[in-house]
Amino acid sequence: MRIYPSKANGEMLCPPSKSMAHRNLICAALAEGQSIIRNVDFSEDIKATLSCIKELGAQYTIENNTVTIRGNPGFALQSQTQDHTPAQGQSQAHSASQTLNFNCNESGSTLRFFIPLAMLQGKPSVFSGSQVLMTRPLSVYEKICQSQGIKLEQKDGKVYLQGKLHAADFEIPGNISSQFITGLLFTLPLLNADSKIILTESIESKPYIDMTLQVQKDFGIEAAWINENTLLVKGNQKYKNTDTYVEGDYSNAAFFEALNTLGGKVKINGLREDSLQGDKVYLPYFNALCKDFARLDISDCPDLGPVLFVVAAAHNGGEFTGTKRLAIKESNRGQVMCQELAKFGIKTLQEENRIVIYKSELKRPEEVLQGHNDHRIVMSLATLLTQTGGRIEGISAVKKSLPDYFKRIKNLGIKFDYDIEGESDGMDK
Image (cartoon, rainbow, N blue to C red; front, side, top):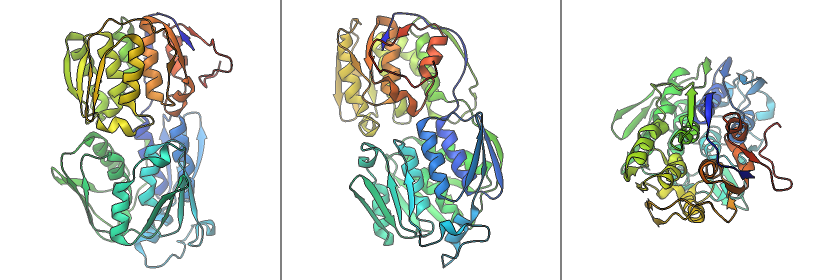
């Protein structure tokens, strides 16, 4: 794709939150009765979660952007019994002898959310997905499985799991992905005794944990902080069906707000001012970067890293700490952003948990930019190209989280064309 220097102008409804959609869909799949989840954007990650809730025995239908789910509480109720007799209303297709197969595609959230759920009944389970996803670390779950005599093995591009999870006090480092903690939060209320999650070291990405607690509360589940590093989750609970609306996504809104830092005039509608999303800090962070060389900690909002680097590159530079976890995303985001920004003439420094973007003269890249099969890299680099112009390959990666990204920026007045044969952004043309 070739993007031309152009300014964004207009008004748009913010894409719905992928993080909140994952959480609502999973809670609905475990609930009794029918739940309605409105305002869902069917990205590849959300499709992966929809595929996996079928393995929980849930059923769903889709109409426009609404998902109606008939949950399978029988899947969960079996965890509170000593045998594997199917609960009333549960299909024999999910009897104890069947291996559960979860295809997570490229969704790290889906993989880490469903692994504890697969341990509810002790059935053999196999998790598959993209090559990159299946190499992402699962050390937190490996330690838990080892302590409870559960078999978890990563081999041949898959994760093999067999064993039943029991209530306990789970000690977990607070500075790892919150996806592990959310996976446990989904599962622990369905066990037959109370559990605690005790977070050691400093807690990163706490807003994502609070988002999980908020959604669980909507579905009638009681789990809460009892002090600054401990969560109490009562056992023998049941998810209750609900009708809910997925709020707008601050992490995706950031890409459109970034266009405003480059001279655009875009009004973004549909964001909750009282949202718990950690990525809502993008606005004060953008303001700081536009005003001066800023020092920012992104431990609680690592997904903002690439777009923050772009805003820093376009203005006064910046120093970012809490960048360590960028290395284990869809790409090594810190490394590849430094690599691609160099094509704009931007000088950078990367350390284990720190990245510096130096104030440099922004130039039109002579080389073709690479998307590295990472949706956030593509959207971040595309943002910067609206300032300089240039070419980027691998744009189809946006399908992972925001399939209509290029359609949206086109409607805002960003000019581009497809100058590479066979190139596609996945949007309807």
